[in-house]
Image 1 (cartoon, rainbow, N blue to C red):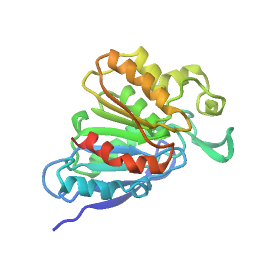
Image 2: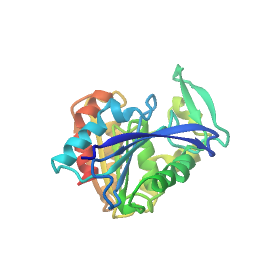
Image 3: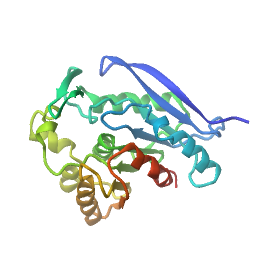
Length: 263
């Protein structure tokens, strides 16, 4: 019998000008002829593609698929570095985080990298459903912020989006400024600003959550975004679960997220 597996895909990003990689979960039934939906699941600012293993996404998916709690799907965890998924600089470069000199901020054309390289590479390499109905995106912390702005800015590409303790800030903080050369860039990517000022497709499903002890108080941003989406008739869910801003919080709720994407 075929077993599920996680493949490592190494590739050269022409957009970023460097080697990148992604981990790809293929369920047990992958070798059947039917193309499968894809979930792109994005790590936070200090994370990597290894989030696949750090929160046991592949193991949880195996069990839930076997028990009929979610439909089979491909799960892609790409490396997005500490970039917020933004087109922040024409040249890929690293700068120090003004809030933490031990942390690097990655600037470059990371939105283009994800939309124009990661998604097409996945569709070329694996037996995927190649339209928005079978394409979902989610992420944690900074990756949740990235997932939301990608889904709202590229609505033709995704039908489900999840922000899990997403880094939704209510105003531009000083420590954020290296990412944004001015307020227009902040507004261009801020999921709350996008939702408030643009049409959002009524056939996109949104899932938001954060811990009740989240140190960034990101439950406030989730609540603000959720209210805007509901007024616009978007199918949005918003939850406050027990926990703080941590991998442990995500791991304790990953089955809820997979059920949302895989229902």
